[in-house]
Amino acid sequence: MNISINKTRNNCHFCSEISQANGENPIGSAIVVEQYLIIEAAQPWPINIWIEPNPMPQGVLEALNFVWQCGGKIRQLAIAPDKEYSHPDYTRVLYYRRPAKFFAQFEKHEFIVPHALVGSLALALLKQPEELPNFIQYRQQTNHIRELLVCTHGNVDAACSRFGYPIYQKLRSEYAAANSNLRVWRCSHFGGHQFAPTLVDLPQGQYWGHLQPEILDLLVRRNGSVRELYPYYRGWGGLSKFEQIAEREIWMQEGWRWLEYHKAGQVLASDEINKEWADVRIDFTTVDGSISSAYEARVEVKGSVITAWNSAQQPSLEEVKQYRVSSLVKLA
Image (cartoon, rainbow, N blue to C red; front, side, top):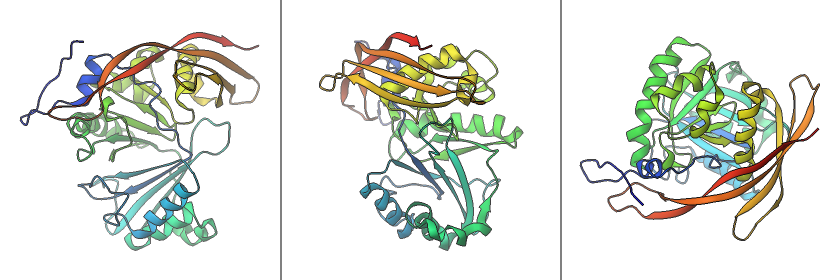
């Protein structure tokens, strides 16, 4: 297979260029979570930012360990302070959670607290909800603000900083600067750096990869054909892998209104050994509740491509299966 890649001065082969050159489809790679804990933290971010209490307070690590030990699905992220958004001597904490089985977007809670209280707030959010009333004075009314988080965590993979930062810069200077209902952040690693530049769109919970500057206007403003976003979509964090693959096809049929519908997915049957196919069902309800219906889909393997999990001088190449929706039926 022909692999077309560039090199930096230290002869690093970028995993995202290998992935894109070989046609790896990003769909199905979104992180499935129930909660997000997002904390402002000065760069540079070490690789093990969530293991040692530096730069994160011990209370944050204790709260995360509690969720992990209970089997919860949480995505923890650091965001870089911004000269316009941030407040001296205070730390912003964003917390999102899945509000119900059927939902359209994650429920948002934002706090701006003194640095010394970050650990205590994390514990209140994730472990000790009875303590949350103590933080009412720090709560921010920002449910109207959309947050775009672009991974620029170069210490995890060089592709994230090399390709992520220009996308962040364009979004921040050309879109967020002119829209008070939009903020754009540099964020730490959230998986899938072979799809860099990659971002997560909150509160929607959609993930994007292999982004190009020319697609940003449509992604942000949603003012054109949704089908142009097809090759960049990693999936929606409210669904599992095969459900995400089916959901993309449904979205292409339903259009932008699909984002407002409350949805839930399930895998009806699958090839659990070889991962060759899965039958999935996506149930949905319109905003006003007037229509409740569902789609059923068969997701099947459609060949494979070679990709790289990490950027390196001699990257380890892996063969990964690619999938397609072979049948999609809307139930009456």
